Image 1 (cartoon, one colour):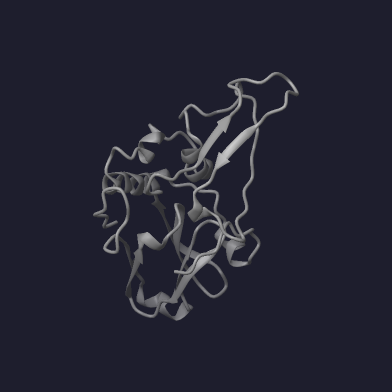
Image 2 (cartoon, rainbow, N blue to C red):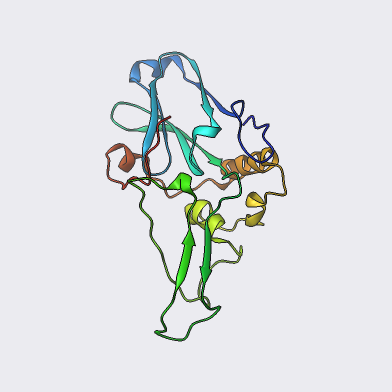
Length: 206
C-alpha cells in the first residue's frame, strides 16, 4: 500500500499487487478478480508469469476487498484481502433515545450512513442482541463493527484505533493491511460471488 494522504486519499495513493504465475499454469486461462465481498468490480486475464495490478484507493468504497486469482471454472488459486479505511469526517453513527430499554419497550434509533455508501442498489440490515450475551469485547462502534468486526472472525485488538482520525491515514492503512494478512479468515465466498448468488451492497464504476 502506498498512502501519502493524512486525512483523505489523493490521486497518488495506490494499492499495488504483483501476481507471479508458474509457466505450467499459464495455460489454465487464469484471471485476476477483485470484489468487495458481494460484487465483482474488476477482472483481467493473466497471460504473463508476472502481472502488476494498480488500484486507486480514492475510487474504492470503504471496507474489506479481495484480490483473487481464478480460472474459467471459478476455482480459486490464490486470494489476498486488503482494507480500505473510510476518510473524512462523515462516518457511520448510531444514536438512541435511551441508554437502556425494558423488555418489549419501543426503541427509537437514528443511523447516519456516509453518502458514499448510498446509491439505488444499497442494502442494509440491523441485528439486535442482548448486551449480556454479545461477544463484543473489542468495544466496537457502529463504524468499526460494520466495516471490520462483522467481516472478520476472532478478537481484534484495539479495533477503534483503525478509525481514529488523530492518527495519520497512511499509518492506519499500513496497520490495517498487516491485520488483513495475519487474520486469515473472512466470510466472503468467492465461488458464490462469481455465480451471482450474493446481494450487491452497492455499485461503483472503477
